[in-house]
Image 1 (spheres, rainbow over the protein chains, first blue to last red):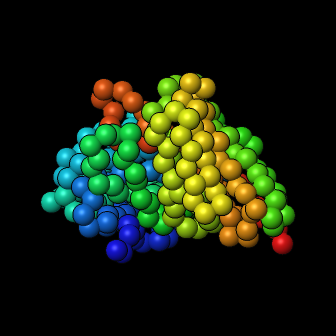
Image 2: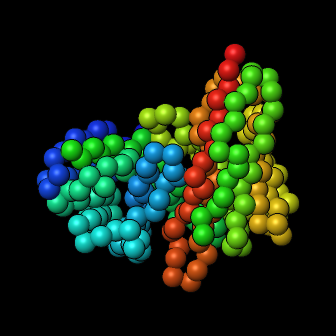
Length: 117
Length: 113
């Protein structure tokens, strides 16, 4: 069991550049989630997929953010025209679909820390 | 709408006990507790599903009072390895939301020798 893997671990970019992050979930998990975490705060939901379908997006996810999960395996999160306010830790989590949604346990990756200069 | 955690931070000496509280203004159907060490992934500790339920993970246990819409995490005889930030999370249970786990702001725990 290799856990949730995220790459890169750190990304420094200049304002206005585009960045892309990758997440590889636990292999048998069909749900994949993206969160954003800033200093001193808990993870904040961005979006999630069930297999290849994107089922929910947060209002926080502006038009500059796009996420994909082709073939229902790994996922990418792209931020276009980055702004300094985008600086944060971007966390990915995955879970196996549980019969009762309240039992859905999410397992997190170590995150990608983005710094926008 | 996110859960509220208290205290924000706690400093303990090894062997001491601490309680972290998590409360919500909305109905809680389950509570998920995680611990995150600096620069690492949040690690799942336990899930509480039923009112009045208690669970344990080594000397870390938790209770869930569904009626009061709150959960408490108990760190007993703390060890240095318990240091980290503890988050409680709960699902937003609306008909159009299946995946949105909402987290509190976290409680930073520092255990000193």
